[in-house]
Length: 331
Image (cartoon, rainbow, N blue to C red; front, side, top):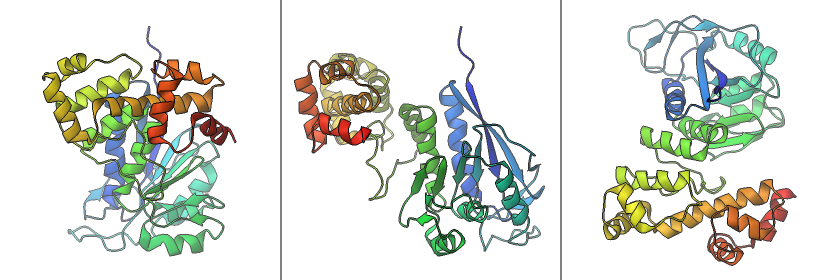
């Protein structure tokens, strides 16, 4: 008997002059996440102060629900950005600030510390006006960072960031960065493997800015569209502790072992053993952070034959030993 999926009510707020890609990109990521697994499902609704809006490309969007009086605990709110200069396509143009006061009032009324608040692009300005970014590290489109800092003077506005996570407050830079942010959230709420699968469906390169945390090992080497190599990576990611042989992986790729090794290097920029060890080290890091297991048991559970093998693989990727990482993670 399978367990019922966790359902996350997701309210996508459409302001006047909605920047369409701020909505379509992140919500497409959620749609693929729903298809890729059945443990977590995102139940999307479109809400706003106006029943219809004209989008940034001139496309009229109708069927927008009125703001609900209450939302569920643990719900997610996605705030789309807007544009000052929409494409004129024969539709009447909404005033730029139409309904913004109602939107801010609704956010103040329903958002709690448990609410996942996701601001795409200039959507952060609505969150800031509602007082929801006070004291929070955040970002927005580079052209709006000054205004965001003025609206939320106690917020720590970070420029040149794709996205910023501060507790349950998520903000992203302009437009396509909303996809990066939603992939990150999907990885948090489901698994990095699901996030990688969604990115592959969207044909998106998983990016990080220079000052952002290191790219997750579960997502490295996925910036390609070779189906056989993705099958091999999917198999390894699903069971990284398995004693994988080159021959067994070659059978998954329907290629000879020698040909698979060459293809894997060409498309991922690393060898198969390097890829496998990166995932095992990531598992070890998680065990160090979440358990009190000694290093021998951490190595065993992460798929290494010994703690010595773990330390050797660890040293290739980290400047400090595993014991130091545990101190850092628990400090």
